[in-house]
Length: 185
Image (cartoon, rainbow, N blue to C red):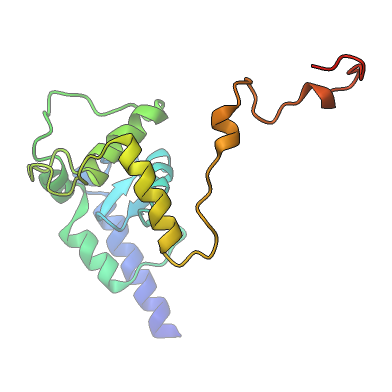
């Protein structure tokens, strides 16, 4: 138990030291000062806002002050960090362009998706991008995949919503208070 505690303290000291390096003092995505989280998928230091967005993409986020880091995660951070991540994920990013503001969450979400999910600025030429398919083909594939992937029920087809032209699909005037039963449609 004592050795584990010493290892945790050592790891925390190393991470706090890495956080003091100039490239790691700001969030890699929005340049907010004093990042409090680590994205272990990319070994980067990120702010609270960006940490939440990374979680939306199921990227692993750990709090610097609350989480315990494994020796492997610490080693990855020592080899990585924001500077190394910029070399990889921002290779074709124009440094004259501003990073998104942390107050504009929608723009920040799009930016994180482009950088880390689609890898738009890595110089890989879209290797990781899935092939584009038409909307109809995509919906049909999704329906058949859901049905043939072990599900025992047929795929859900919401024909009621497609055939219903009312503004609110769940609204029925007959269920409203004060509806006069003599006023049939």
